[in-house]
Structure formats: structure tokens, C-alpha cells
Length: 88
Image (cartoon, rainbow, N blue to C red; front, side, top):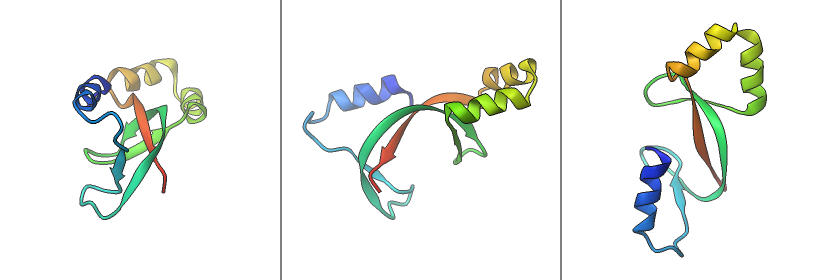
């Protein structure tokens, strides 16, 4: 889901509602939203992956050639994301 899609969904909701996140796809636990941060994401597979902060992104840039790094970004191997941090 893209930010623009989430915004449209949230516009239809009670603006005083608290945002609660599921711990996993099966709903095995829940936590209120604590904070929001812009990061990067590298998928390991179709359902999970790694969050990359600016420091780790810089390390990755240094490990790869400029062409390899640009290719990863272009091929969506690494994408900019908005991460929603849970309270717990």
C-alpha cells in the first residue's frame, strides 16, 4: 500500500481514533502506533524483509559499485518506505 492510498482510507475514519497495529498477519498481538519514520526496505521474499536506516544505506553504498547500487534502487530491491513503529 502506498502513502496516498493510506491517506485516502484514513480520511474516511474518525480523526480522533487511535491507530493500533497487529503484531503479525494472524493477529497474534496488538500495539498502539508509537511513531512514524522514513526508512528504506529490502525484501527478503514476498512477505518479509529488512528495514535499512540511513547509516546502513550509506554502508551498502560503500560496499557496492555506483552502478550496482543504482540498479538495486531502480529494480526496487531497495525502496523508500514509511515505517510505523509500534509501542511494544
